[in-house]
Length: 77
Image 1 (spheres, rainbow, N blue to C red):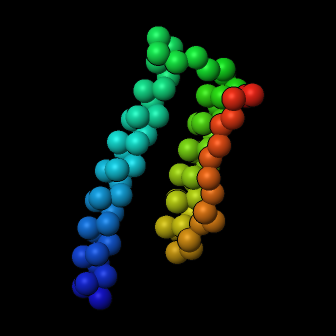
Image 2: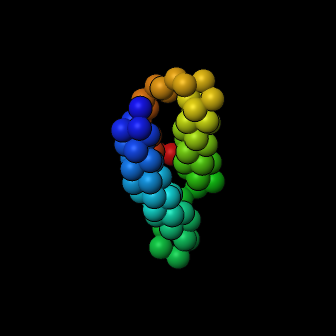
Image 3: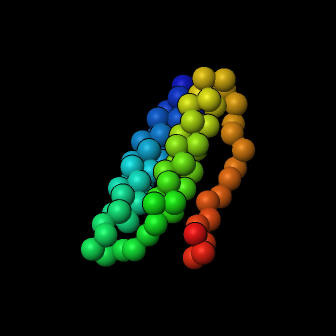
């Protein structure tokens, strides 16, 4: 059991820190001096991130693994 706990801690540290960095990089996209985007595109990004976070919360509270999803923002939005 201890090995599973140690592995969980190792992976959690690695994955959470990577995710925080990735979220910060997504936040950089909000810089209107460097990028052009619509309010609809911004809302779609935020909605996708929030949905995934909600799924993670649910997985931890119910010990379930959420369905794998991908996010796609196309040029027409």
